[in-house]
Length: 425
Ligand code: UGA
Image 1 (cartoon, helix red, strand yellow):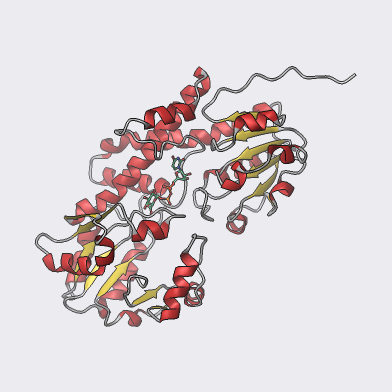
Image 2 (cartoon, rainbow, N blue to C red; image 1 turned 30 degrees about the horizontal axis):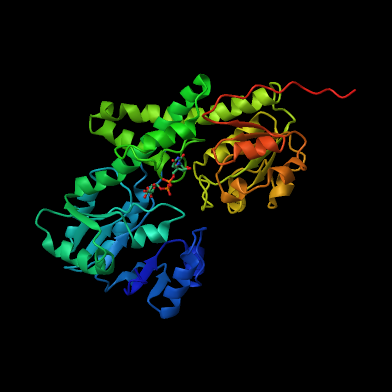
């Protein structure tokens, strides 16, 4: 917003986070974000505060508050409602509150009643950015959705003015009611999760039928009605959004008495979790049944590349399961080691890639960082004890690794026959 020329104050209850942001430091890894932060802070158009009074006088107030998964699977809305309650005294008639948080359908209507009691108005304006691409996705979105009260032209005009530099590119912009705007967000994430689980279900078939999942995805993706994006088979989806959003969506549908409509999302989640079971099974099979005492090097901890986020990370879950089965785990990630260490203490975290694989009996590639696709299999071969790699993200050049003497297993492909052992002497 500051880069678009607006004067922005960012408010959070977390004092240390606010201090870091004010110093231009991003609290997480996001390519390009530190530069934007520093530029915004330097111009004076971007300031940070822990006191809601700093929001007084603003014409628009964005709600970008986390709605994490609660104990029952439903979204925990306590942070959102607490922030809005604190915001109410600083609202004035004519100001606009803009909801960005991902919420169960129906919440915007509840918040609107609170906001309108002050003479201000509410709009629901979901965001669709991906971690790792946050800046581009924000400044060059696929679409804009404004959920407003019927006939609220004034809020639409305020949003149009705010986003004028973005709208100038001709991006599609839809005006809807609150419920539709809320649903666009969760329905989009549910669809993406379904697409990933669809290809992962095909991977299960490919593994027993002897087909190649990446070729299958390429061929399917040629059909423009299907599309190739989000059709990468592998260890499945994780992160702070897709897993909790589908659980929250199921829970909300049940509350609304239409739980059956989203019954398929339970299967989407089961397929997703079965990929981790498959990696565990392959790992056990490769080492003769028991992982106890086996040195396993895992490459990747973040839920996806270009992020240091380990929330609901499939890679970190595999690390945990390996530890539970007694494996001796060495773990590498280009960005996520610190965050992983704060939640799972068992692995030996090693920052230098070739050191992380030293002495490994088994190598697992669990996040498709370019560092791993670019790893030289000959150099890697000289460091491990056993040349076996399980590529759980389909990111290695299997022929190259094979040529360097590696036994290469991948999700979505049949397990290769074991070569006849050459016994010396
Ligand atoms: C997701 C959505 O893509 C965004 O549109 C949405 O705004 C965001 O959630 C949110 O709700 O805030 P994000 O969580 O950053 O974005 O990550 P994705 O790029 O969607 O990836 C999610 C997971 O799916 C990752 O674990 C990734 O490895 C996995 N994935 C993705 C696959 O396994 N296969 C694919 O083909 C694509």
